[in-house]
Length: 187
Image 1 (cartoon, helix red, strand yellow):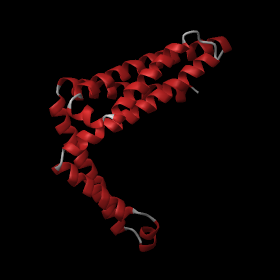
Image 2 (cartoon, one colour):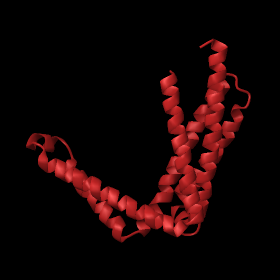
Image 3 (cartoon, one colour):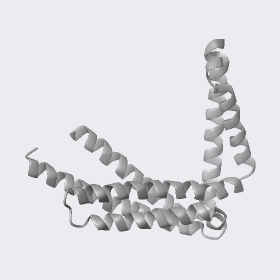
Image 4 (cartoon, helix red, strand yellow):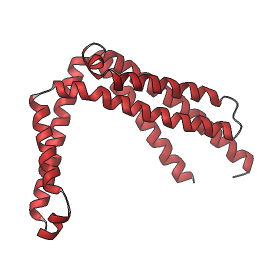
């Protein structure tokens, strides 16, 4: 249990740090951040695509027939080249992806709120409000990706900082409740 809790805690803090860094970069240096993200993703897609193509070529014929290594590798390499020479694709697509991540974070906070309510925590509704804010920001990012990319890149940065703050509060509340439950049950 302790190992699972510490791994969960580490993952939670890593996501909070990631959201906070992305949020600050987008808020303070939006154009530069888009360029870096575009080049980084381009190279990652190219490398993964090439590795998959080479892996397909090096495998036995039957293994190659059972997988989609060549086609997946070619698609990823093509996407990498597309992003390398057409950076605005990422600028349009990424806010929608972030929006989906914020929606997923909202669902996580929704479950945490109900978990806290089930164990009798009085302030469970705070996480419910946090889930609502995550949903609102996520829906805005998903439904308005062009607006987010061209007009409000800094809004995405603020939204990610808010998400990091909400996740931090959720993580701390849940951690405190877990400690309280351990003390109550004598574990």
